[in-house]
Image 1 (cartoon, rainbow, N blue to C red):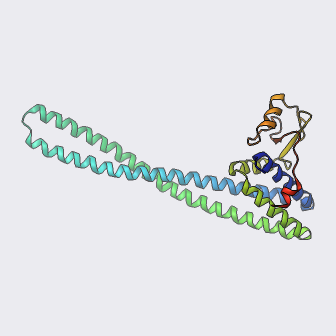
Image 2: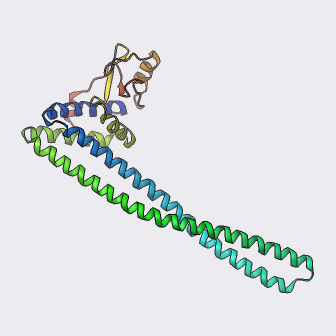
Image 3: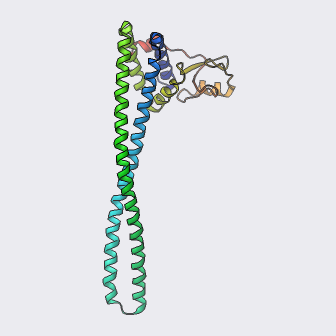
Length: 245
C-alpha cells in the first residue's frame, strides 16, 4: 500500500461500502460530507488570518525598533549642528535631518495603519475561531446523528469508519482534502478507467492521460469532463489491505 493512488483507491472502496449501508439514511451522509468541508474551510481561513497577523506583528516589532533608531539619529544630528564649522556642513546635516524626519513620518504612518489592521484582524480572527468551533460542533453532532441512525449496522459501520480514519491518516493531507472536496460532488470520487474512458461519466480519455494515470501512481489525474480522480484501468483493491487496517 505504498502509492498515493492505491491508498485513495482503498479509501474509495471503504466509502463505497459505507454508502451501501447508508442508502437508507437519505441526505444525512451528504450533509456530513458538507460539514467536513465547511470545517476544513474554516480551519484554512483561521490559518491564513493567523499567518497575516504574525506578519503584521513582525513588521510592527521591527518598525518600532527602527523608529527609535531614527529618532536617536535625529537627536545626534541636531547636536552636531551646534558644532559645525561652516554653512556647507550645516546644510548637509539639515538635509539629513529632513530626510530622517520624512522616513520617520512615513514609517510612523505605516506603523499606525498596520496597527489598525492588526486590531481589525484580531476581531475577525475571534469571529473566525467562533465559526470554526461551531463547525466542529455541528460536525460532531452530525456524526453522532449518523451513528445513532445507523444502529442496525452499528458494528460494521463503526469498523468501516475506523478503517476510513486509519487509511486517511496514511494519505497526504492535501490529497485527502482534495478527495473529500470531490466527494461532495461525486460519491464515486475515485473511478477506474475502462476502455480508455472514465467509468464514472463515460467520457473518452486521451491515450496520453491513460498512460500518465498508469505510470504516475503518486499523482492525481482527473477526468476532464466530470472531475473525478482517475484510477488505472487494471486497478483493484486487495481485501487483505482493508482487513488489516
